[in-house]
Image 1 (cartoon, rainbow over the protein chains, first blue to last red):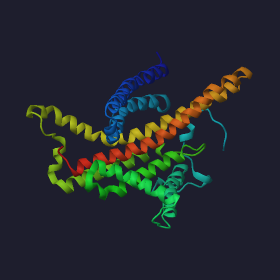
Image 2 (cartoon, rainbow over the protein chains, first blue to last red):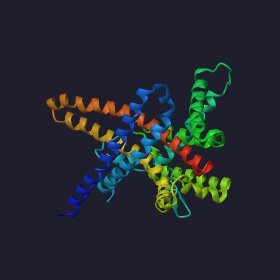
Image 3 (spheres, chains in turn purple, cyan):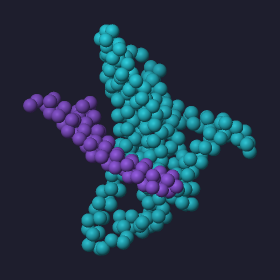
Image 4 (cartoon, rainbow over the protein chains, first blue to last red):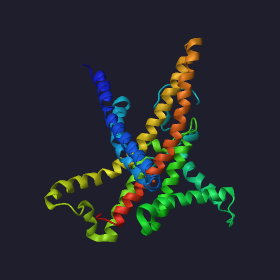
Length: 75
Length: 255
């Protein structure tokens, strides 16, 4: 296998990181909606926490995406 | 200059603005580039708008003034809800970051405009300013008690061997995650837009059937543009709220 092919396989594998981020972000918004439906009056106050959890979870997927982009366009 | 290029990375290339010559300072290239131009716009545009909006400070605000007050109240809500009363002092910093990032993201949404936040050095510099402030303020306000940040209270002591390294690693990765999140979100969004618009061009070049088929990616590109506007705002908001949370660690460590 030549280096060029290995690069593309590596980029594809790095994108798997976004699978985990997708599950995590889905979980966060799903749980938030579940909680918000039960007690809509408390939902407004938790918006900051929602975004914080979203940002922290998403960061890990972004790392994978960055590795993929580096493999595709930089190396 | 407006030639269509199929390379999705072409939009991030830094070139000298207006064909200006290269400027050198102590061996470094300090030319006025398109990145500098749009950063200057992102800095001057909100200053001008805010100054104009607050020119006539009326009790019953005009449309411009209420927009400015809305923005102020929004960021004030973020700082006070995360940092409490002590956070007032950091309002100017958070407000500056929020407005600068929001403006540069939004300016980048115009076709052929450059997005300063797609350069990692821009976002990394901002993240380092935040983290340096956190460390300096943390040690200045609390002295060595700031190190309690790495020792969460209320857990049995053998767990400290596990928790302290994790806390230290998570603290050290903060500047990285803070800068990479903004950078990668904007970069990936712009690449995605470019790739989908590329589909439209490629399909419509294929003939009558392709022209019909190109409606689908065109609709998707329009939807993605709307999504990108949301992301542009959301990332500025996320940066501001994370700045507040990190500053809160410096003000009240050991929670």
